[in-house]
Image (tube, rainbow, N blue to C red; front, side, top):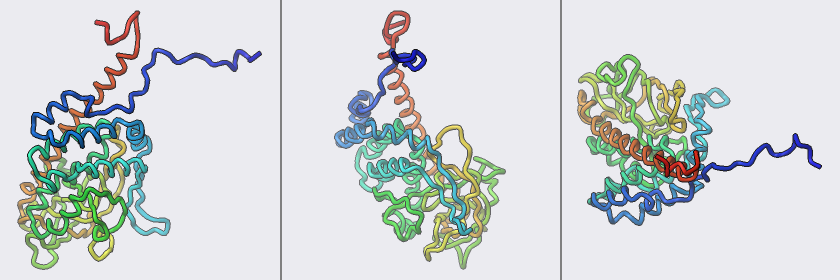
Length: 341
């Protein structure tokens, strides 16, 4: 006879099954109606395929994994050389590759047509229901395009890689990649969102002017996705606050001195590394005229804020889906919860 103390303590009952292997697009009548109404009916088949992927057990688990194992900063290699590398769980890179392949970082710019932004927004709306943190570098890359276009010579070199649907997470110079991601670095300790208080300074290497190279010295207090291949950075030049494209690596293959000091200790958004950085003579190219930094980067900021709205709505939809699923599978006080007042 089995010992009583070795017996099972209880049977799990009145708990809902795990919600997985469902389609986030075909199962969302409101989203489907909005996509048709706003001119993106042509994208329905593609969105249905993406919705099925997002709702699959595999991708739901990837979302959990990317947040369960947080990014780790490695400032130096074992020989003491500066590397400024952030190591992510492989699930994070899988999620990035999936979102970029879906065109969430550039499809409306690469294939402009009626409803293109609607189709992308619908994809983002579903993506954040699986994992929202990796959406930060995705949306920054997408939103960088209008700002980069303000400097045609730089846009010509960078946009083909920015608009690629491939994903290359290697810690190598952008010249060795066919696809890149772009972040932004604006806020400083003393100003926060009041960027006109920024003290990071930019000195021209040579004549200066639009598209020219400058050296940047200063700090940024909140830089998300520090493994992006380049950043749009605000700094004070001779003509005032200006916008620069600062790569993580110089074009000669040497490391650009954009140094990551530490990662933020955040309550949420764990999969997405956010950092404090210092620029120690970092190379950057001026976007537009000196003194036009806020105006030149403002469209990028506005587009990321729009994506924040989409992500918030997507998050609420995901939460509501979980709530309805739970209520329809749990009983209390003699009846199913979704049938009670």
